Structures are given as structure tokens and as C-alpha cells.
Image 1 (tube, rainbow, N blue to C red):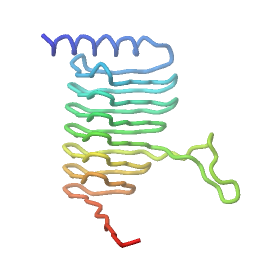
Image 2 (image 1 turned 30 degrees about the vertical axis):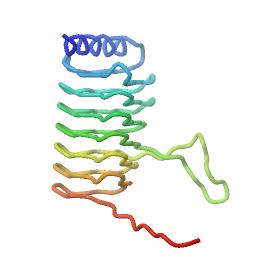
Image 3 (image 1 turned 90 degrees about the horizontal axis):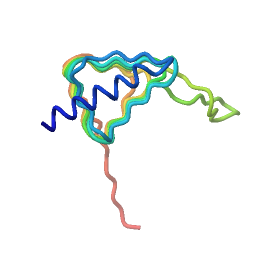
Image 4 (image 1 turned 120 degrees about the vertical axis):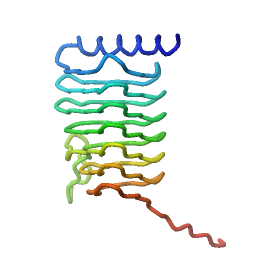
Length: 179
């Protein structure tokens, strides 16, 4: 009964988004969206959800104007994870994001002599290949492409292209000394 209620509430939330003017929301009717998950599609944004997408509590999907966020079938978005899309983010079939994963396809513009420019952004698409697993507290930066069936170790910060079938772990050296 609880699963049926969650599916019904998920459908109603997505229908409300679809009916909002200036937003494009495409979805399969079978979804699992936690009540505390947030879905924000700004005017001019597009969200596409495949069948049986799982959004866990406190997860956030935020599509900015001009952005297109796609989550294919059977994607799992862990507790507290956030995807913010200004251009293009594509999460393929069967991808799992652990808790607190952050994915951004854009960054603030920074120029020599001017520094950080809060209203200017640089965007590059982000993609995660099917059946990949992204470990807890990982950050995927603009321009990141992860191939199919990859495993990304917890706490990684990634930028660049990674071919299929890799285990990607960023090791950090701990330095301990007496003050």
C-alpha cells in the first residue's frame, strides 16, 4: 500500500510540473520519488525521466533555463544527492548514485584581473554510462563523461573522460605530524 501511495504521489507531482507553463517534463508513469525529494524545472528547462527512477529523501533535481536533464530507466539517486543542469546532463539506464553525490554541468566564469563573475557561467555536458555506480560524496564537474559499467570510489572529484569498465578511485595521502 505504501509503495502504491508513493507512486501515486510521484505521478501527481510530475503531472503538476508538466502542466507548469514554459517547462517540458517527460516521464514514465511508474516512479519512486521520496516526499522530501525536490524537483525544480525552471522556465525553458526540460526534464526527462525513464521508467522506475528512484529519488531518495533530500535528493534534488534542478533544471535551469535551457537545460536538459535526462535520467533513463532504473536510475537510483541516493539520499542528499543533487544534480543541477544548465546545459545537458544524461544519466543512462541502471546508474546508481550513492548518498550526497553532486553533479554540475556548469561552473562560474573566472577571469584574470576580474576574478569570480557570479552571473556568468561556463557549461559542458555531463554523462554517466549505463550500469555505472557513483560512490558517496563524489562530485562530477562540467565536461565529465563516465563510460558504461564504471565504479567511482567514494569522495572522488572528477572532470574529464573515462572509458567503459573502469574502477576510478582517487587516493588521498594523509599527512600527520606533531605541531
